[in-house]
Length: 87
Image (cartoon, rainbow, N blue to C red; front, side, top):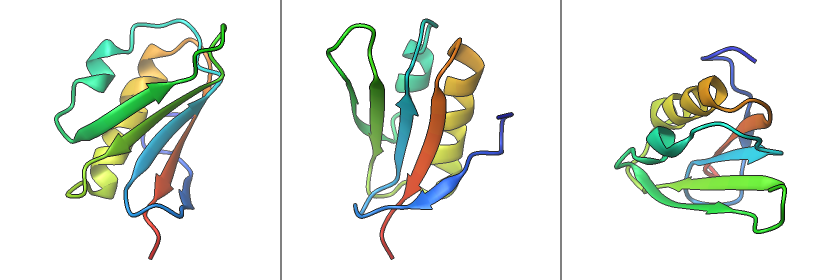
């Protein structure tokens, strides 16, 4: 997937979430430094199977897309997804 082409799926949370299934090596620290991020959690198993980034209440779809694009550019593999807040 190229930048700006994230699949957005409806979620059950009240926040935007960016997820990565099967994140593999890459330097993603800059992607996690956006102030709009409330928390990020990566699975503890090795190799990691999932990364989840929950955005702050004020976040917009553009914020989620910016973070997803950053992750796509920096990860060597993994499926990046965006989950929208419930409506």
